[in-house]
Length: 452
Image 1 (spheres, helix red, strand yellow):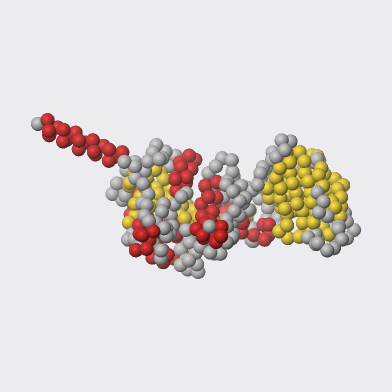
Image 2 (cartoon, rainbow, N blue to C red; image 1 turned 60 degrees about the horizontal axis):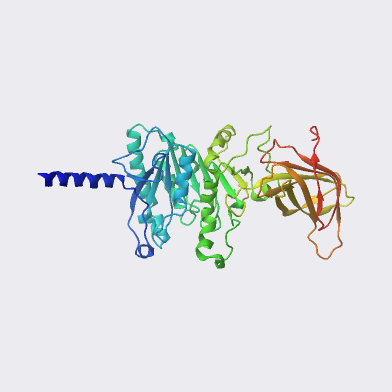
């Protein structure tokens, strides 16, 4: 008899240990990629209570998923080497830190792992069907479609779109992180992510000239650094073969991760083109008399009310980033009124220093500015540090010529105003003479409050 009880005890112990086992993302190798993998979708549930220990859920068993809370699905893309996405753990943790929700990692590594891209992309609709079956079970238990959020990376963005089409426009939100371009560029809306696939669709395009989708796909489409080459990524294969191919494409994920930080609000500016944004023509949002500027990433949906108010089906928004994490850039306008008799064309480099000696610099050279007598030129300056109290400013004027005589730029007034913090005091300086290629350093003063 004691053997029977011992056997039962051991079985219970094994079962208990199995119940406590944490599920992990499927890890495969290059061998699997060479021979290809059949599709097998696993859903890994993380919650605030178990944010480091995933549990397997499926259409037959929701497990610890709380249907009264938001459910966020994370959907990866093509995995040519079979490894787990390096950003996955950080994204799960970041989401659970900002909100108490269900996070479901959609592990379709068996299916996405192959050296032949088209084999992976051909399975995206089948992944969407699996997710629909799971969502149907959620709905049967009382969940709401409006409480479902899908974050899709590369091919995963189109998978999210296919799920959204099965519930026409009723999903709460879809975020596309550099949706895949190959096999999807130029396809009709039913064959890719589309603005109509959810109540709100936001997209970050970081590699439109290679692995990412070329055109707009959301209610608002964000284009960091114009959507092309990202600062800090290698420009040639000599910077690392894998990084050369993946860095721009993955930057969208890291920008989304940056948006989850309290110290880095990534702001974008609605505009028709990156060129117009760089030339300071589209920076009217964020002032007291206008709507706020849209935020990139997790909080992008705070802007959807303004989209509906203006009845805009789609909006493009542009912004620049720094080379390193968390990638934040702080925008200022540098307003210059000159009094040269003759027109001067050139660029301005501005450096800021605070009382502790911290410095940050911006070279405003996207296009040469034209300085005319008594005419105000507003230049967009981008800094990678946010200095709260500017104690010193330096300016350098350059025409870019190496053979012509040195010119002077006579300045009646220079004004510095923060776009990221419009409530901060504006700083001025009067009667400056900038010798070409010579740094002019000065202490600013507060601008008169009534000055326009």
